Length: 116
Length: 116
Image (cartoon, rainbow over the protein chains, first blue to last red):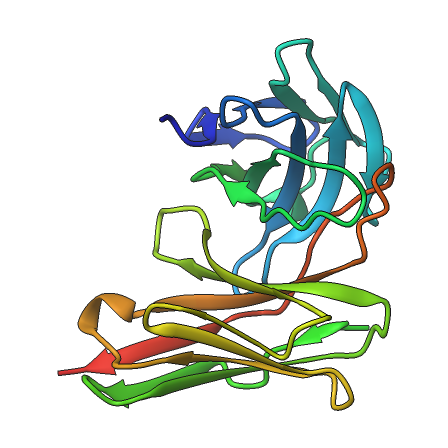
């Protein structure tokens, strides 16, 4: 079975531009989360979507937005790019069961975004 | 304020010996804990998890121990193999409520190096 797939693999943008990153979850997984990982740090939670609704948001500015489509794939959008947005952007999916169920998130290989 | 701390940036262990990776957390609401392994140019791979109702979980060569009173968990790898050389991340989240977010909080990671 295919894992979490992300596109593109690498991307170079300049300051002030806009970027859209894409993610397809594991088949059957309805929850998608986005993380930002800068060099030397652990992944930092940006958003979570479940059943096309935002279910959680980390401490990121409004320049960051996301959405989830009926097929559970997702897009992360970042506007007015800053040098500090250079990072590895990771997408994760999990089945998301009923309250009390613990399901690990499974990650894609990420999109490496470089801002010049 | 770092809620998940991995205080050892790197750890070197001889092949065949035990590797012990440590993780401390400060948020008493954390209820579910995970370990991920990451190779360069790949996304984090789920290894093992533990919920707060248990103090130990074992899967093959990997065992995770949880000490809730000390807010400490550790990952034991026995025996260590060359392929275990990677960055290991500890992650945690509060109890899953069924409707809210279950975004993970990560530590900064520990780079494990297995020496032949």
